[in-house]
Length: 334
Length: 220
Image (cartoon, rainbow over all chains, first blue to last red; front, side, top):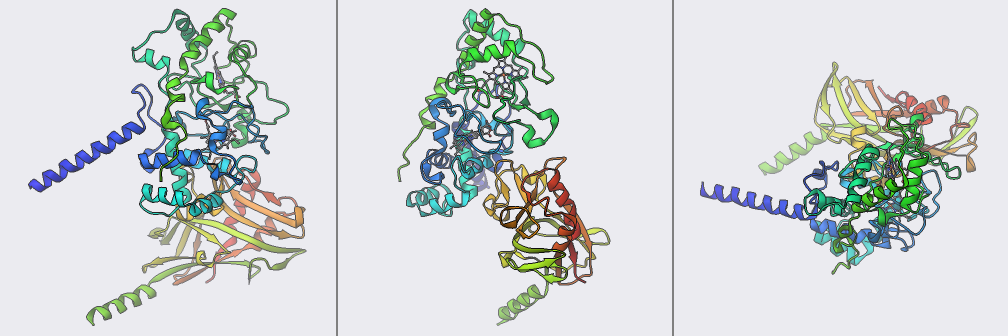
């Protein structure tokens, strides 16, 4: 009988210990909604997150060992890419797109600007196999990792055996990316009562709620649905967004709504990176807003209001997240 | 000694009591080998790859499921003889079998799996997530493709372009069910001079998926 209580106590202790570890790896604030990602099929674990981090920064994933995920998704840009709007002229209609920022991915269930990828675990297969991105294949990546003494050791340390499979690689990459939670902006500190908005930010907040929150609702600042925000289709790119996945006429020129957190780090903006400043974005929304969608209405804001709105948007920058060492490159000790 | 006899008995029954589901591709009753030319009507056809998913295999008796295959998804690859049979342990009476050609939508949106559903098997689309249900590649003199190549990658789980097809075939109970894949029917229904390159979900993929149930039959 005593032994049984002891056993139960041990189980409870173990459970709370693993809950603590989980808490450390993934701890969104209480006002965030329930994540979309099913953690039951891939429970976070610090060793696996570290493996994912090593893979994310390792050019071994590309055909000629020259490009890593971080080449296009830099931690200092909230994991977006700022050099050039179109990440390396990619063929097909899926190419020619701006590398999106990576954070709060656990709340999304469709990835890429057109939602072509249906699960975070599967996302890495796309860049790895794209001839103009990493030009490799998951089989070649597995072969290369199997030949690496360093990864053999890491896989043993992580999984207790040295077998290297696509499932382990993809789940580790997903785990690292799931830990990229951005919830440390001024907006969040205001929300938790630690700070206050300036009068200008407050005015911007009101304008934001009036005009933008239909598609960019708090606290994630996106519905992650597919909308047309009135951008004229770029004639040269032939990219119809969601339409290429669903082939539904009504999905033409709809793109996944991006979050508005970390905008100071993620320029240029929009799926094709056509705007490089927030002023240009504001000019677009106040002049050309003619999307053929349910929220179709003209946004009329004065130039003074534009400044207010931008000052609010800047409170969504999360410096803590962008400079967080635990998301940056690290040399794994063997 | 007693144990030895027991083990022998178990082995004997285990062997006698397996149910085999064996796939054989054919052109007009002739078994097909890979990379070998066959003449069909006015075309010469060579198959270089044939791979497909068989999932949710059920054995039925009088309309009721009597046995559900232990393996939820099975990838048949004609380049790998180990994959040509689905083996079940057990005895049961049945008068029909039922199975999917392809991977269902729930599995398609549930992330990464190992084994037959491993995306490294070359049956997964990376840029538009989803499994290729049925893959047939080869050469046809009527194909306008480069070197007369034709490529059929049939799949997609989103409506209205879901390419999954479930079929039921009546059959007599036999320990080894030989499932013929009558490829000539595909080439009769699909004009390879027009649809020689089908590699994404859509209406052309559906057109081929609609023919798939008819190409499977069981030798009696």
